[in-house]
Image (cartoon, rainbow, N blue to C red; front, top):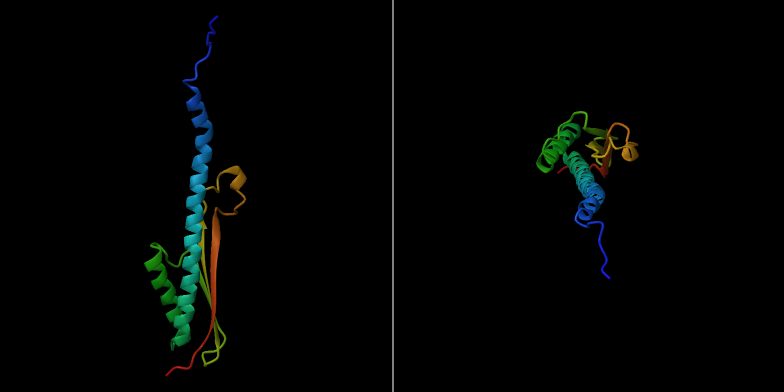
Length: 141
């Protein structure tokens, strides 16, 4: 007795691919988005640290801190300018030695998945990365 096959397995690979491929693409896009977020977090932390360091050694801490953030940001991540995505807050208690300088750098990263319903909980389609540094003003020689 022989068994007859009434179906073919030729199309099953394409159906499996059609089911798995969107999940695979979503996973890869999530890994890339996480890389962008991690890179931005490192950049804002480093930019705030550099700005605070320059401000503690400078005679005009506000303007030197702003230029330090712009210099660091433009060399690290092209396209960083003070606009709606990049902002900075400077708080200097005193310009005398022992005074405290606090620098907060904020950068908004666009989210890939902001239009997809389960991930649309992000308000304006971006995530804010914030880096903060606090240093004491040193005595100048």
